[in-house]
Length: 117
Image (tube, rainbow, N blue to C red; front, side):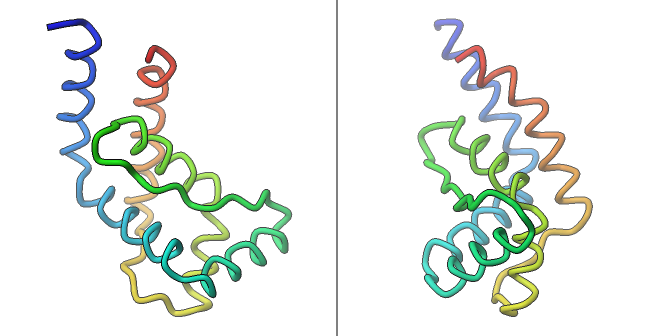
């Protein structure tokens, strides 16, 4: 087994530990991708907050780094996402403070792996 394959398996196994948080993030991202109203409200909120207009990124099941990109993007838009979900009363589970801390920790851990690959 190659070094890359071992790293890939190691990262995928590690992500299983945070699956409940990742699943919540996936649901939020899917909600924004399916709802043009929610997406427009998110863009508006980002502009109001002086943030770049960043669309949430979806995960691709076969690429571990897409999970990293999805989590990183949701962190970059954290305040706008929280605000938008609250204002539109979105039918998705919100992220707790613990979930946000987990996302940040996971991104910090995965970033060096992403740089290597």
